[in-house]
Image 1: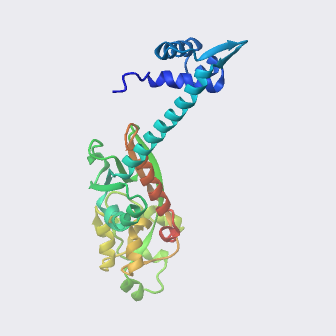
Image 2 (image 1 turned 90 degrees about the vertical axis):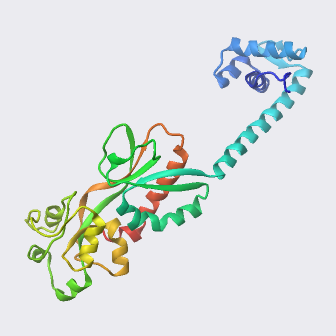
Image 3 (image 1 turned 180 degrees about the vertical axis):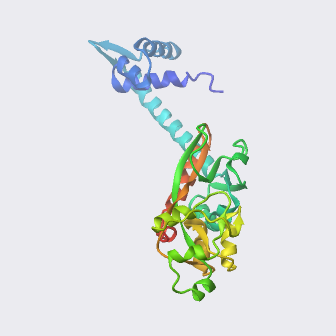
Length: 302
C-alpha cells in the first residue's frame, strides 16, 4: 500500500520549487543545496514519467503537468500537516501524568487545597504528588518536577523562582489578648519558637531595628507546620513564612504580630531536569504556580 508514493522530502522540495519558481530559494527554505533540490525534482519526474519544470531564462517555470501536480501536492501536504497537528492535540488532551515532588508542609498547607483549580484549567494534565523532606531525597527518574524551598543548588537542574518568601512573627489569639500592647522590643522576654533548619529571628530583629541574636532557648521544630501548630497551641511566638501560614491566619488559629517583615533566607523554586519530554506540561504547571503565588491573597502579609 502506498508503494508508488515518493518520499515526503521529495514532495516538499517540489512544492517549494513550484511555489518559489527557483531551486536555490527552495533549497534555502528547506535547508538543502540547489543540487539536492534539482536531484529531488529529477527523481520525481522519472517516477511519474512527465516533465514538471522548463527553464525560461533564469526561472524554472512549471509545465501544465507540473501546475496540476503542484496543486495536488500542496493540498496533500496541507492535509497531512493538519492531521499531525490534530494527532498531537488529541494526545495532549488524552491526559499526561506530571509527577510533582514536594515537601509535606508545602503540599498540605498550600498545594493540595488548590490542585482542583489547576485540574479544572488543565484537565489534560494529571498531577501525581511525591513527598520528600529533602530535595536530595528525590530521584528525577521518579519525579518530573519538584517544588522546593531553599536556594539554587545543583547546576544539572533547571531552577525557576516562583516566590521570594518573607518572615514575620505570629502568635495565638490568646497570647495577643493577654498582651495587647506587646512591642517588638518585648519579644525577647517571651518564649520564641525556633525552626531547626533555617534561622531567622536575628534577621527579623534587625529588620525591626533591634539588636538581638538568635534565641538559644524555646521550642525547636524540624517541621515548619509543627512550628505553627505549637504557636497556635499557645506555646510561644513563631517566626512564620508567608505562604505556609496563610491558612492559619485565614482561619484565625494564628494572628500576626506587627507589620514588620524580613526577607526569608530562601525562595520557592520549581526544579526540573534540562532534558525532559514533559517540558510543555512542566511549563503549564510552573506558570500556574507562579500566577497563584503572586496573587495578593498570599502576598498581603508582606
